[in-house]
Image (cartoon, rainbow, N blue to C red; front, side, top):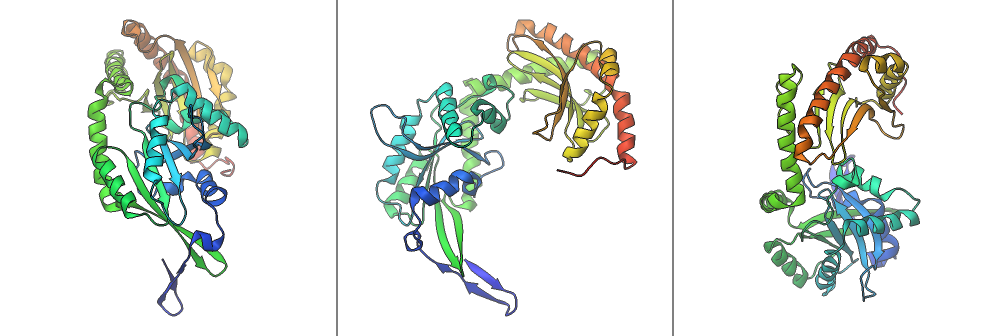
Length: 387
């Protein structure tokens, strides 16, 4: 690693030091750094897999053994990630150690994973494990979430130096479709400051995207009969039927919209960042107005202006609406829902009829008020500064 000396137009090599020389320890320092900032490990990930959620440190919940893994995480596919940290040297046995942990974790069920994460949150300031997992994976309810599906657990090794037997074994594991990775972490001294450089060395950054794409392709082919693949198939089928009905009922907004594997389907309102959204869940369906502009202040202003007209809007809609200002989030929601079994195809005609009629009523109630508020936004009416 080099520093640019702008005054002399030269490079200055930074001093690479060892963790032991600096007095840093594996658990007290490196492990704590990574637990607090797991995105530091996402040094060579594609957009689809970018992000890790740490759910436990020093996990020892293995029956009949006192062994502990360093960090346990979830990735964006809901798979468990075993993270083993070493400092200046990987040692000889780190691969065997991590594979044992991955094998132990392979049998963990959803309820156990949520419980493990809740224990971690309770020890570190609190929080709702189920809600946090849903937000991380982009699902509305825990019923929609698939955790630790199949045998796709991942293993990440972290050290300043990897022995040859370790890198050779990791490469062999990858050839056999086990997602093992090596990330080199090196400390550098720059005056009184210490800099940390993390670089993924296996797979190399140049090969990572290709390897990830090939693995994803194979995974998609294998998951056709899995729960996630089944949900996607069901959603595509449902949305196609719903779109056919919406168009038959005269919806011009849905004319050029295609079905999706997501549990929601949105169309524009004519106001930037605002959409009319249909939502399909296992327990109910929803129609909603989603307010998600780039500015949190504008979202809250729009919501408040509409909420001030709540009585008139609900009268125009013909029913009570649920109003979610979501002060801890950027997005605001106004919706109505109907309980059902979303995956029971015999109920689909009634569900789709409800969605179509209530979406027409939602558009009729909110189109004019939204258009007027949009004019006020364009005129530069004071909204308040972005928090």
